[in-house]
Image (tube, rainbow, N blue to C red; front, side, top):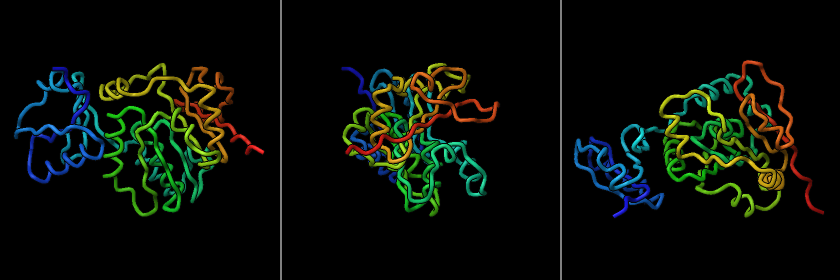
Length: 262
């Protein structure tokens, strides 16, 4: 019998509350739940019963696969939000010209770092929707964002499991103020092992001119794109890099929304 692609279980400290929570996670995402005995290792399950496993514990949801694991962590987004609250500039907020009440469509959610910053910038009256094609990443991000103490000054991030190219085509023109793309870098920077696990699950298809055009149709103001430094990612799309510090390790570009059809 072939292993299931993805399932949900509990951590080693199994109790009734944790089991209920794990079952709820499985139900939210339409995944099978696998009961686990206290202190039972899931290592023998990987590659036999399941290809990958979402483990629900006191620290949230962690994705396990044969090569390693990773979980949601606000990381730099938490620091960026602190700086925005202190009145300091944030590159994404500046380039996208985000303001209270805006609506933002993040087409490449990943673990939600930029979406979290956007949720603060647009405030409780705004809206942030994050699309993630990879179901494992979508669950980790979605459950992590559900648990993140964002505060009353931020809107919730709505997490949607979808391919951005297909999702954009379903939207009316001018549905969001800002559309954002952060494609996975083709040339990865040196990273921690957990990030390498993330890369194996992430979407690697490059942003195409056709998808960019759909983003411009859906946007009311801007499409913003983040790219890797020392590549021609933005130039291939006809975008000019925004001026940044020479110490920045990513580049940003933006293009205006398409004018409404007559």
